[in-house]
Image 1 (tube, one colour):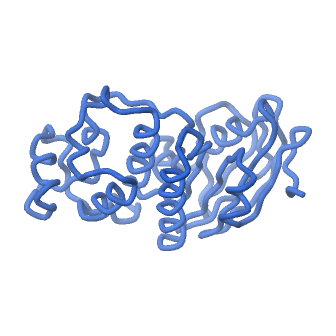
Image 2: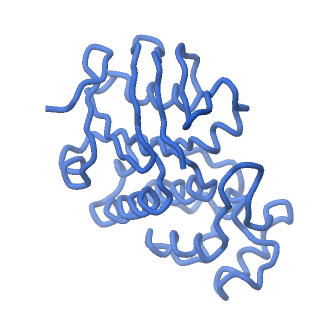
Length: 239
């Protein structure tokens, strides 16, 4: 995995900002409402117009196709968009065409998906190997779901369920860096702890750089890592 480096990032009234998040490092960002926390993440994800450059390891964002960048530098927004009918249809690169590799509970859910969504795990271009069905199952179970959640209609999901499943959808892309926008804001303490655990396990095992916007000072103290705050359009160490 690779670290993130922000060089002179400016978006609307925010910046210019310089920041380095090493591979495997967690950096929290906080600040008052309207200070630009979400703007920062969207600029790094190349979703909003901005000035400056973002680097993933030694690769500049300007030299990487936008779709590839957003897969490698994955954003978990505060409210994730769902476009297909079932949960599983949002995980196109994680489900094996060889359904016999999956757990007995997961196998029927995979087979019910349209064939374009059932691609085998493995390496895509220079991107790290994609997770196999057992890894997806582990994430789902750890987040409090039965594996057959893949067959659920999106319309039946609560706000909290959508938020947790959006994390699985993000990790299924095997991003090298995570941009988390209030990843536990709509969750009760138990489910919030589940999300924290999955993120921390991914960070430590995959060596992913994590930039996490959080309004919760107790969360920032509990998990650790560096904590920065946006003040007067700049990033400063949190006191």
